[in-house]
Length: 61
Image (tube, rainbow, N blue to C red; front, top):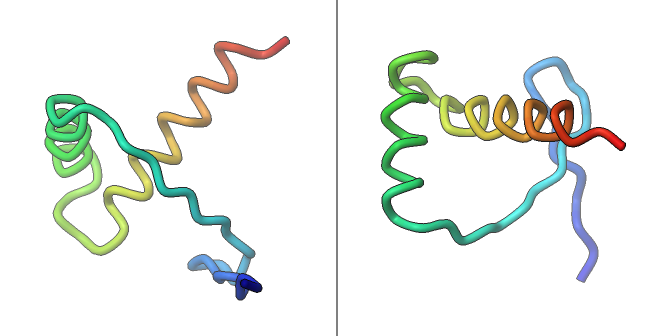
């Protein structure tokens, strides 16, 4: 199955990842995401992107 590229707000290509996380972690992520980004479209993607970037920075080789 061929994936079609997804465009972000600035027209940049974006990937898509499906993951499973514990319910309590999901709830915390949603709550913190709403507090930081507001209950707007894309708030959860922004929160996940920020978390991944932070993890990558802290775990650089």
